[in-house]
Amino acid sequence: MGLDKATLRLGAESLLARVVRRLAMVCRPVVVVAAHAGPHLDCPAPIVPDRWPGAGPLGGLATGLRALAGPGGHETARVVLVGVDMPFVVPALLEYLLTRTPAWDAVVPLVRGQAQPLCAVYGTPVAATAEELLRQGRQAMHDLLAAPGLRVAYVPEGVLRAYDPDLRSFFNVNTPEDLVRAQELAAAETDA
Image: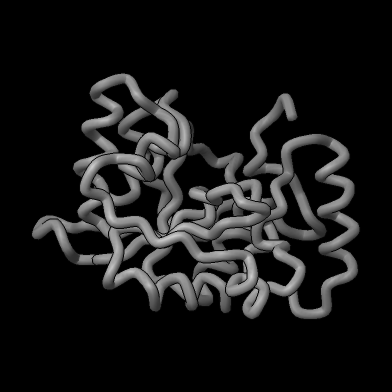
C-alpha cells in the first residue's frame, strides 16, 4: 500500500481502531504490537513495542504472547491474533476458535485449503517456540505451525461458515482496490 495500513480509514475509524473494537467484543485485554507507536495511531488499546522489529507477524505474535503471559507466564492462556488489515473479523468466529484452544496450542482456520495464521488463536506456551524460530532467523508463520511438538487444530471452511457465512473475517486490505472494496463493505454494514 505504500503507507501504514493501521492509519487507513473505513468511515470514521482507522483500520486499527476497527479491528481493536471488534476484538474487544470477545477479548480482554486487547493489546496492539507495533514497531512504531506514535500519536498518529488511532488506537483504543495499549501499544506494546515489537521485541522483534522487522520479523513480521511471527515477531509480533511472540511479542504479544509474552506481553499477555504476565510475570507468572500464564496470566492469559489464550491469545487471539488478528492482522491490522483484517477489518471484518467476526467476533462470533473468534469466540468459537477460543472454545477449541484448551486442547490445542494453536487453532487455525483453513480457507480454500490455506491456513489463516493471522486470524487464529494461540496458547501462550507457543511464545517459546516462536522465539526459538526467530533466533534461528526463521520468520514464517508456516514454520511455526509446522514446528515439532506444536499441537495445531485446523478448522475447515464449512465450520467457519457457520459463524462467518461470507468468510469476511479473512478479507485483507492489501491494495488500493482492496481499500475501496472494504469501504464499500463497511458502508453497507448495519451492525459494524
